[in-house]
Length: 163
Image (cartoon, rainbow, N blue to C red; front, side, top):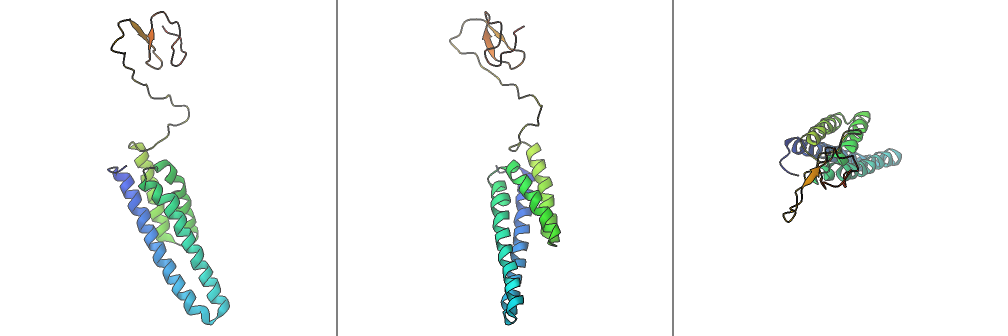
């Protein structure tokens, strides 16, 4: 879904965080290759760089792509997890960017993204149109709004008693 400013901001923040992570991992990879003179130190640094590239692939898959596809609910929790883990592992700037993206995803959901209704909230009232050929009178359900024959005591859609 394009045009949602909060979602566009979240997508941009996640992308900038990814770019910063990529730059960090490339530098770490270069140091790992440089430190291959000392085999154990070089191997440790290279393995950290490879773990970082897996991390980048996870962020791309579970956060950025989902936001890009309009699945804000699906991207929100992984983005928060990546923010927390980035902050813990001293990637402060990407962590802060992911944290702000998490908040912006919440704003995008409130603005009409793919939000799921809160538990306990009533479903939206559907609107039903009477068939054009129907000349019979109908009673509308006060609970769901569905038209029902006047002879019905209960709604055919939700089962609520018709008053």
